[in-house]
Every structure is written in structure tokens, then in C-alpha cells.
Length: 312
Ligand SMILES: [Zn+2]
Image 1 (cartoon, protein in one colour):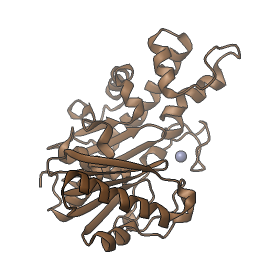
Image 2: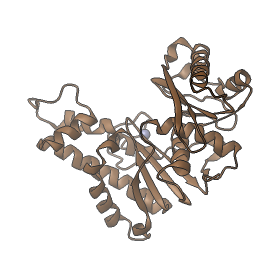
Image 3: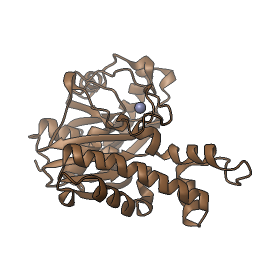
Image 4: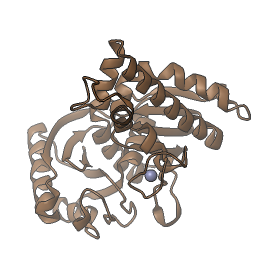
């Protein structure tokens, strides 16, 4: 029975996942990064033991998906925005020594991509691109069941490819990255900058709320959704032209409102990708649901230690 550990900026989720991708038992704890790495790994160990006891199953391996950057081969945490003081710490070694089982780790987008490739919407796809659109945009490429890695085991930051050099500034230091124009907060940010000061919905405006307002016919929210569709479509059209994958699987909180965006995205791809067989690139939604990151984390172990192929 494999345990998945999903390390995020706000919470750490753990669960026992069987060989078909089913979550048998789960628990979570707030990350509370400021209390330090050692305390967080102690709490993670404790809830892992709890889920194991609850399911009456012994943990035989552990897969980790972590917000990045992380080194998937050495297991070291890099300079992560959410927990800068954890740099150089190694959850792979630490969980190995506590549970005496093999442990593997990937960046969380790579982990979720492996989950969808093995047990979800990307099953049986030779070249799978996974894109998650939420607070940011993460993407991963799985080829023949293996994660595509850059130099020094790096995770390419596809969310930071530039769509409009005169666009808004991004955390990475550039302007007009795909993430700064098309992640969830971009919709609310645009309304805050473009709506008249008496627009009644400015307080506590989120991407989710913008989608609700657009559905109720609010013209400014509809414009924000139209703009979101344009930029999402542009970035996805770039991926179709650059990689021509068999499928692009979309996930993340913004994709909970996918029906507002999908037609426009498909139109943009049809208009923009004339030199590649875009008609053959399937655009679909992720199928693993709320536990996708957890299931993906467990899948990391299966891919590293049970043959590597998504159908292994
Ligand atoms: Zn950026």
C-alpha cells in the first residue's frame, strides 16, 4: 500500500492509495512553514502513521509531490517561495529513515501529471501535457510514462512563458507571463484595474466569484471571462504548436468553470495552429478530482519503483 504526500504552501495532505489509484484513507495538517521543517516533518510522520492504522494497512512505499522547485533525484527542497527556510532539507531521506521504505519525490505538477497519465484522463496517451490553472499555472509533459526533465533534473516553468511583453509584472521578474495573464487571480486583478470605481463587486473579488458573476450576466465579469479565455487559449495554442502532444489535460480551480472557457480555447487553437495537426490534439479535463495531487504523489512511487510505465 503506497502513501501519497502532497506538500503545498498552506497544507500537507497524506493518504493511502491502492494500485488502482483509489484513496483508502486520508488526513491533512497545515504546513505552518514558519515553525520550521523539522516540526512539519514530525507532524507529517504522525498523520502518515494515523492513516496507516486507520486503514489497517502497512505503508510499503511513499511518493511525494511538493510545491517546487525540488530536486526529484536527490530529494532536496530548493528555494521555494512558501518555505524559503526549508531549502536544502530532504523529506525523501527523512521519511525513508523513519518508515524504512523507498520514497520518491516530484514537483507537484509533475506528480499530478503522472497521476492523470497512469490512472486518469491521460491514460494510454504517449505524449501527455498536463496544465493546472489555479492561483498560478503549472504544466508538465509526460512522454511514454516518463516526466520530461530539463537540465539538472529541473522542472520547466511553462506557466512563465511570455504571452505579452507589455503585460503585468510577474513574481518571476518578467512581464506578461502566461501565469500573470491567465491564472485565476488575473481575472479579479483585471476587473480591479479596469472597472469603474462604483462597480459593486470589487470587495473580496476572486476568480471563482468572477465566473459566478459572468454566469449571472454581469457585463464586466463577462468581459473578464472573455479575456481569460483569450489568454488561456493563446498559451494552450502555443503548447499545441510547440509540442503537438496527443492530449492536453486541464485541471485546477479555474477549470471548475471550464464550460465558460473551453469553446473559446478550442477556437483559438483552431485559428492559431495552422502548421501542426491541431485537430488530433485532444483537449480534455482532468478526471482524478479533489485528490488529484495526493493520487499523483502516490503515482510518483509507482513510476519510480514499479517499472516507470504509466500502465505498470
Ligand atoms: Zn513569470
